Length: 516
Image 1: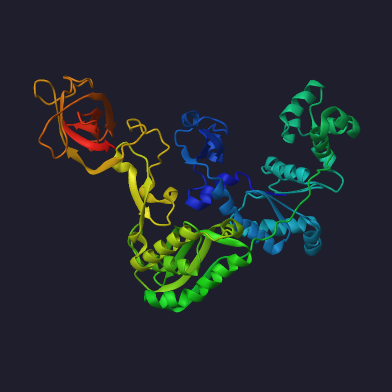
Image 2: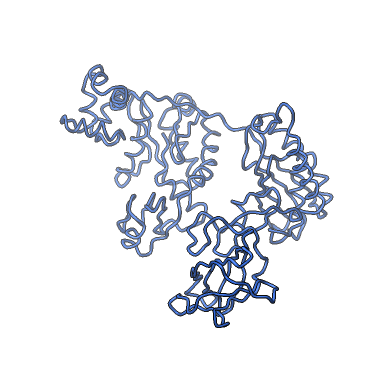
């Protein structure tokens, strides 16, 4: 078993280039999920609330835990292991199992094979890796973890348990390492404290008394893990990269040169029964620039779609800040998200209108550019105008900067449903008058000074009687900043039965929307 201690911390340190001695904590659901050795020296522990961890270590750097980052950063490590030792099983990021028979014969022994693996990981910058060798995955994992205890004494990252000695090695470990809380509590009530005491029980009696879970735990304690190492099948190579020498400086030249590669990219996916719904395109220029962009598709990418994305990324504009300013030396396409081809196959009678709509919009977008075809989406916000955004056809709202304001957040002050049917591009000036003909206003405590009696709609000179009204609902945005705003919302029904959503800001009335 290969174990990389504190892998979530190692992964984010490698990804963000944070100093290794920095006190760092990863937060998941408001609690510390993992912390660096520097943070542990100050008393930070897994399971602490964020504020308590920061109180113990004021210099603590807090980041959100990202399991996808763990897998992405560990994938090159597994690939490097497979180059020298085939048959790797990924248990989880930071922990993997390897059968020792083949490597031990090739390198001349288990210790020499482990030393070769440590040398490979050291070349990757993983100097804290630990290796345990035993008769079962469970014993080997705890042998790897036991090297952490002796690291200050022997500085040896490899622990080899002799063949047949796993039960004796595990004998002194507490029951908690089984990760069976209910069984652990019951065994302690019976006076059993260690794995050795548990392993001394008769296997038949354990099965009859504790069931299948107890029998499997008993096998672990005896060094006879029921699990076996199942080597992973390396995923098919779906990336397509094309190098250009000399560099291409015209978009039409590059599109023509990449056409065959785009066909090959889609064909590889089809051969494996997959389609790509999210595509990452990396463009390398001769000046060292790299343009990295994730593209999404409402259905799946074909060769023309891949070529269009490469061309749009070169042209720049829309959500892309700028295009590259020198010749292109390499185009690399990576299928970020793939799905089964059967889930996207046409039905018995075809897809009819949907297929025509997708084809037509994609064709217009191909001719006019990525930002020429827009679809409406709802984002977060308090004002209705802020919540209505338009994103390019095919882009996912979740990954779009325009919809970065998460609509699931509380947003105190927003209007609950049902939403108005008509939202004005800009608020329209209106008048709301009291019985004396003066403008209705709100005092410093948010209370109405007078009652609305008459209402003048946008663009109208006539005044209508107010039949019903509700409010005010105060909205305060960025009260700590000079650019913040304070206003009050009202709902009003006039004499014709039309309903309006009104704003009162700086003693002036505005119509934000109307209910149809």
